Length: 330
Ligand SMILES: NC(=O)c1ccc[n+]([C@@H]2O[C@H](COP(=O)([O-])OP(=O)(O)OC[C@H]3O[C@@H](n4cnc5c(N)ncnc54)[C@H](O)[C@@H]3O)[C@@H](O)[C@H]2O)c1
Image (tube, rainbow, N blue to C red; front, side, top):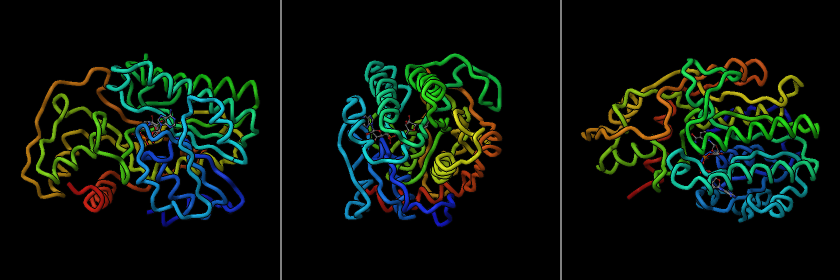
């Protein structure tokens, strides 16, 4: 992966902090930055939901550094910012159901943790922050495709926490003249996404089920749709955002997706075809707090960041499945 660079600058001039870097998207960013010889890549992660095994390939790289600590501690954030030029903020407790079960924990990591990172970045003179928001901020808005300037009411504590990030980012950009860009990810999938735990995402869960003859559960009737985004596209958006030179690009939040819609049933049956499995899906109750359909308008990211997602869902599923077969034996 990452055979084509998304940047023009020499990365050996820059140091990057990646919060949540042992998680799925964060570890893909680590891989990209080290592949292109960044001066320093520092991960700050408390390993609450990430896995150090995602960082094992880099542990002997002299440009790589891992700090096991929490963004809930403002001092840990300040320490982690020392000597850094840029921040990719990926740390958060994901999952709508988790946030409904433990809303305080979600708020602490996602809202307070984000504010700590913003303030540490302010005090440390960080050049630019690119942070992870989420398509969940569209909430009950029924318009399709989703356009950045029109959101509905949030449907879960997770969505509130991500919207809170966007509000704080705006206020910090305005008052402290900071360079901050938000990315509303739409259902990202790919290598390093874990099928483990109660809050795993649907694609790794399906892969795990189909490869190991377990039941593949579908919440609702499976006709609900998502704009599934291969992680390489999400990494591209991050890299383009951190180096975007158009001043108009700053202080905004962008949809990061492919702009194509796929139902959960279609994902299941495509994976069933690829794995040659006989498994049938098991349908169960819809999940509370979930949005029904999701499709992004990605024209703003294309226009202002030069984002151009290359990998469509079918190719992404194939690459992910190959990775999954090698890395998730059970
Ligand atoms: N994967 C998706 O489809 C998706 C969609 C929308 C938004 N997002 C957002 O993108 C970001 C990355 O998501 P991901 O899928 O890689 O999730 P992930 O759970 O794999 O990674 C998040 C990482 O943050 C770490 N973390 C959590 N709380 C922390 C804390 N208090 N201090 C330090 N580290 C902490 C976890 O240990 C984990 O390694 C998150 O902010 C998530 O909310 C992801």
